[in-house]
Length: 234
Ligand SMILES: O=C(O)c1cc(=O)[nH]c(=O)n1[C@@H]1O[C@H](COP(=O)(O)O)[C@@H](O)[C@H]1O
Image 1 (cartoon, helix red, strand yellow):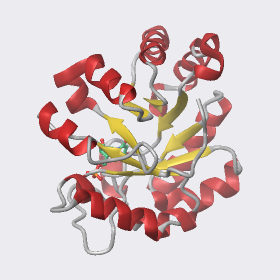
Image 2 (tube, helix red, strand yellow):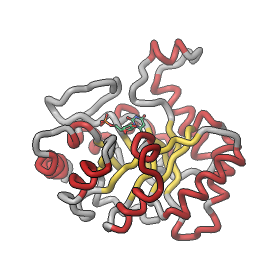
Image 3 (cartoon, rainbow, N blue to C red):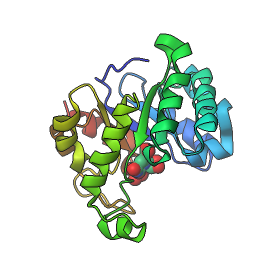
Image 4 (cartoon, rainbow, N blue to C red):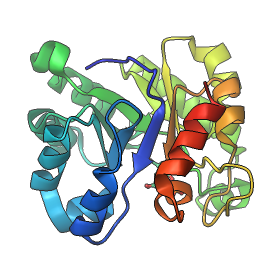
């Protein structure tokens, strides 16, 4: 799939109602954003919903964060590729073998293989939360550690917070893609996100793609907020 990144905003479609989601999507253009379908919408509406978005011309990031034994994850990313999605993700903490098998499974799709990325440390986590998991590292140290592992396993990039983008670009190179949620335009609420940045700061730090959900989808005028975000990162 194409890494073309003039469209940097990936809108997180986290709705429990398909009609509302589609009414929102129909106000958007595939020229100004891509769409992310995550666990909530996929669990409610499944592959048919994803295919409908693709038919409307959108690149879709299927965000199901697979984390299982290598064989199961390889089969799951194969199913995602068959659906025609642009990007798919797994959890880096599933391990080298799991990530590597997933990457190998996508080889048969050639140029049509989705971009495969790994979630490092969720943007909702901070140092105390990592400690509770038994990980005695800062989020940044753990992100770097897992991102290196993902690169070694052949993945195309990682999901991290924009706060780690700078150091990851320096350590892992220009071509390793950084997809950053936890994006909050000036003045919007952090909610459950802990490691946040504004769209402009994130791009300046080296993010390739910005995942933005509630600041756009819950806005009174979502299309205007998207336009403002795109304008701020031109
Ligand atoms: O993989 C993701 O997309 C993801 C990883 C992560 O570390 N943090 C994170 O927030 N996400 C997703 O990004 C979206 C962020 O949405 P908002 O917080 O509403 O902007 C949600 O759909 C999350 O599931």
